[in-house]
Image (cartoon, rainbow, N blue to C red; front, side, top):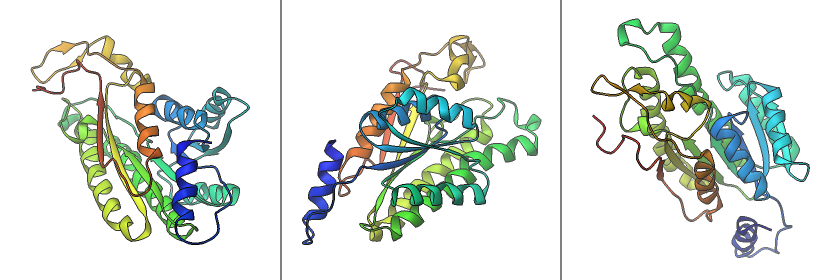
Length: 270
């Protein structure tokens, strides 16, 4: 039994009713078919969580489930987070399977093309906004609805922000704009979730080694116009941070966490 499971029992038992039946903690991880989403899903599964793996590619989700091993409790739900009906179906599936949701890791995202503003098409802009902002909103809304009505009520939402929620990279207008907006989403969810025991935090990540950051080793544009290789870090370090945030009792919250490659050009970027 994990510390989170023990805390859940102690916390709910203190409310005066008979001790609740032990239950596993349940989570939804979006973008779980690769990268940070896969790393977080595997970390949670190893810690004993029941994890719903959401993403557009079922085959990739099934690969994640296989990596978690036969002892893990996983549920693969092919989901396009830009489609309201698909997101509704995701949370209905979780409610039907497990009866409740304790954690949403709101992770699905896309960078989009690194290009000058005048060359960024509306379709490219809209694709990034649809995934990073509309998708984050829809998933947060679905989780919030379920967490509000379940008994015991409450849960936790962790949004994947980015260092770009603070400081942009060259040619990243759409991505940076959406990640700044995610910070507003996080703050509003934190406030609106208080009456319902729903906590919300955000993890801002810099250069975790995934498919999206493969170009870092070859060199990426810097603010002074040069190309430079940048250090990366193991995505497992991100996953362990998310697990820590998720394992806190409901009375405590990591509002914002920054996890980055120590020597990447962020502090002093410019």
